[in-house]
Length: 209
Ligand code: GRF
Image (cartoon, rainbow, N blue to C red; front, side):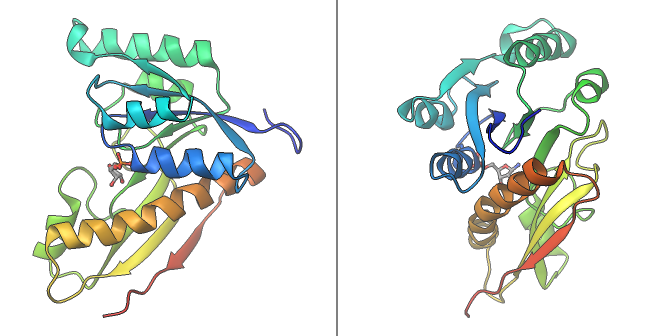
């Protein structure tokens, strides 16, 4: 594990755009957190985040899930790659696959995820539309430790944003995403410092109307 002088080694796992990955990589570069991004892994060869990582000289790996005969075979390959890279923390950032219990358990306590809702509300997909449909006045994002049950692990950090009267799911998603970028960096910084045990904070963000 990392100590006060050696940066924590992160591997970030993505499926798409990679904006959270980028904000974490920038925070490492700027020394906002004492960490390095050793590699970015994607299950999607078309993920935009792969190029963004490569542009920053971050090593990238593609494990195209469609090329594996089963979910189990994909998870086994991902598990082997993670073991080989051997990071201090596995950081899921927009990774759109459900991982097997076996793989999650082998990293339990050291695998993090960000989810665009105030968990335990709205695990799974379409969180912004669901928050709007429910008439919620607040929405946000959560960083949690990954456990085998989807989006149900211990929450480390949450950021709250208001839902505005004229919000669409896109405007709400954009407001939440801006907070995600700060939140994930902050949560990773706390995990690195304190080891993630019983770590919890809430940062309430207000947006001018
Ligand atoms: C984010 O909203 C994250 O919370 C969710 O997927 C989205 C990924 O966005 N899990 P990006 O790829 O980090 O831009």
